[in-house]
Image (tube, rainbow, N blue to C red):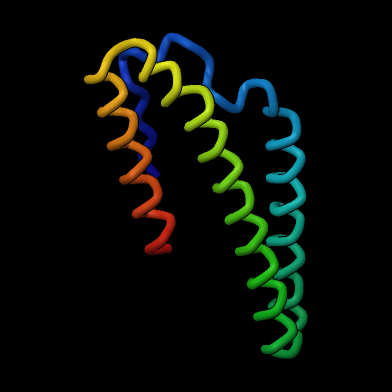
Length: 104
């Protein structure tokens, strides 16, 4: 997985104020994934495993939507205050991120 950080990323991320909540959600999802692995190791019924995969997927989607909201509320708004060019760049980032989320 490649993570890129723009050179202009001197300000904290939009989710800084909710970082602890985000980490709690992600740790809960991590536990769900470990539970799914245990189910597979224990030869659980396929439909039960799929149900848990679906729940974990929805939980990750909720984290994604929350991060997207934070990004728009902070990073995009700040860029819009900076200049039209900065705003356009951030809108492009959001569009690309939404496109990736919709494909997943």
